[in-house]
Image (cartoon, rainbow, N blue to C red; front, side, top):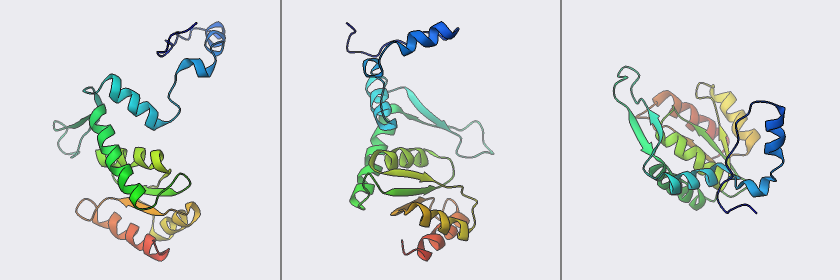
Length: 165
C-alpha cells in the first residue's frame, strides 16, 4: 500500500519506464488536478522558494523582480476574490491582456481558479479583440492600466465598450 505523499516519478529511459508509470493509477499518484491545486501544494511545500522572476525593464537586465510561491498564492487569492465579487463563476471567461509581469501571472491563475482564463495577444486590433471577447463571452477584462501600456488600455477599453462590458 502506498503512503499519502506524492509518488516519486521514475526516470524515462524507455518503453518499460512508461509502462511502470502507467501501472500506478492516477488517483494514487497524488498529482494536482488544477493549476491552483499545484500552486497550493508548492506554497505549502516551498513557501519561500522563488516561483517566478521578471525583468521589469528590458533595458536593465540586472534588476529583477521575484515572487515566492507563498506570495504568488496570496496574490492569486486577492485577484480570485475580486473576480468572484464581480460575479465570475466556473463557466465564465475572463479575458486577460497585459505585458508579461507578476500581476498577469497571478491574474491568469486566479481566472483559472474561479472561472476560465482567456488570455489574448496584446497587439490585436480593436476589431479582433471585440471578436475574441464576443466568442468567449467574457464577463471581465483584465488588462494593463494606461500608466503601463496606454495603447493596450485604449484597445481593451474600446473592445470591451463595443460589447457593453
